Each structure stands twice: as C-alpha cells, then as structure tokens.
Image 1: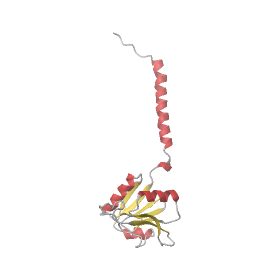
Image 2: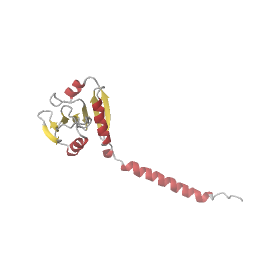
Image 3: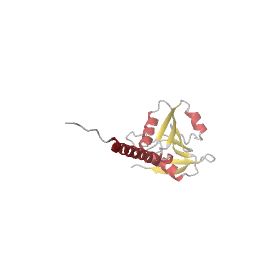
Length: 164
C-alpha cells in the first residue's frame, strides 16, 4: 500500500487558521486580565522569628492577596514611621494601597477597607487575640478591628468579633 502525501496547498490555510485562532485566544485571555484584577499586594514587616505573622500572611494569600514579607528586627521603627502608637500595636505591620494594617486583621475587613476607601490611616487589631487570623490556638477571644487617623489617633470600631 502506497501512502500519498497530503495536499500541501490544502494544509497551509488550515495551519494558518489554526495558528491565528490560537494567537487570538491567547490575546483574549491576556487582555481580559486587567491590572485592577491583579491580586492586591501587601507589604508586610515582621520580626524574623514570629510564626504567627507568617500564619497571618498565609491567611491573606488564601484570600487572594499577594504578600511580600520583609523580615526586620527593628519593628519599633516601622511602627513609628507609619503612625502606629503602642495602644494600636500588634506584632506585624503591613501596607496596602496607602493603608496601614496592624496585627491580625481578617482578610474580609481588609477587602472591605479597600472597597469602601474610608479616610483613615488603616486598620488594627491591637495585641494578639486568640482566634484571630494567624492566632488559631483553639481558644477564641472577643476582639475588635479598629480604624484610626494619623492626625487623631483616637480609634473607632470598624468590626467586632465575639465568640460564646
């Protein structure tokens, strides 16, 4: 049995059509992902030895954030630079889209902050309450997510978490 070669003239348009279709599909996929759909980037500053900070970063990543962790032994300077007073402080400080996020703030509250864009410096969960993201110890403390302004550091309640 003799195998006849395929008609080269018939293959060329089919090949070009297939190639063009693939390129068009690639363009549509790339064009449909706009910068506004990219994961929000969180610049997080933490002590190199803090495990709960890394657990909080994992919580944010699971919720669609990109977290860039910066290890430093001088967290005091980071907090001072970003207007975090001792009353507002926790173990890590993060920055996202012009806001300061202090401590174990849940991702849902950060998403709400970015959506509503209130005129505040940021969000904080002072201290390290058990049951907050990154502090899952089996115990659950009641805690509040607070806002504050740079010019008036009097905190206001943004959200509350209670457990019975």
